[in-house]
Length: 558
Image (cartoon, rainbow, N blue to C red; front, top):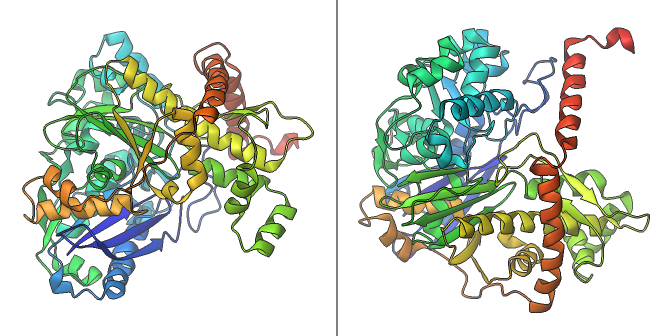
């Protein structure tokens, strides 16, 4: 048996997987007690700046202490039957830590300093720093931005680190190691620092064996010149390798045997390629949850506009691994259901024994395509691909006094499907063909969403058989690290799990969606490519007002 642990945005999930055939014997989940910290630090009354998204590292350890033993109990698995453990993490989530790996937020005198806390992937407050990095790279003619679609966003590690330096220099100086959470959790398990090639390539600007130069960093800020050498640089490990043995402390947390292999850390979407059996060239995998990450191996090296990153060996060793993504998907559906479904819909859902999402879906799927007369842009968390602009925001057009909540809900689902189609077409037009598309993540539970995507893309969708595809992928990598398989391809072939039946598009609906997609593309370019700066102006005005309120300068005006 092997264990896979998936650290998501709101919770951690554990699966126990049989090595021979990938069968899932048991699973368990643990919700983070602190969730996503956006308003105030625990125990503090001071408001955080807009676009902040932090987390508590103790929540990650609690997953190991609670969900791992629970999964073992649920599966009736004896600890001595487990031969390895693998993990994956949301990326780009970063921690400032000491040389021993202690998060700075766990040092009492630093606990009330926001920049001492882990920055979640969706921490977008570093967008000004990202803009400066992009501008300087363009001015200097740096080559590495082409590997990131031409520009990086606030989610990337250099932007976040530069924000810490400029907003709180003391925290920056106290940071011995600036580390991706995917590598930090492995450090907690095996007691030694490792760095994986995937996060370094996709989020750390590590290309062709090198980081951005000292001269480049110094031009951003002289104090930033030593960032790579002092806080980041470390030998990179290949995916599927053994990071080290499980320590006695980690064994006491998890109930697993001390000394079993711990696999090198990985990114949640990338690790799932093994589950989806999409390690071959041209097989795109879309991991759909709160956000969506699109990953694909290829033997073609090309520059794709708006891709999030490109790394050799970033998905599996020996291939070019491409990544694109959408910053908001399930988050958008949840936001609408939680905030805008009227009380009568909540009452009806309870009476019918449905969740609110199930009720909205049941109402939405009865309508014909285009009947609602709506079109949305799925930028509620900004745009990751293909525009790479987190100052954008959501748009909804076509509403009338007859517009119903389920119609808006459907328009939002369709918008995210249009966003995925935009990404697929960007790859194809850049000479990186997408032969097939597989869906994984939490959305595999929603037939309505899957059918909309099949119709919008007008292609069959393969579907990962497990709703815990990330955790299963981590377990597959654990099997490789433990020596049960020679490589990830072989382990994926034996342990991967995909449904027998694909989701097939309806030709009639696909024709109408082509018309809607042309409108989406028109609005996409108008609001996102410079036809209108209105969304940026609104975001700037909002942030300025919030900043004044935080500083207390508006008290006398009220």
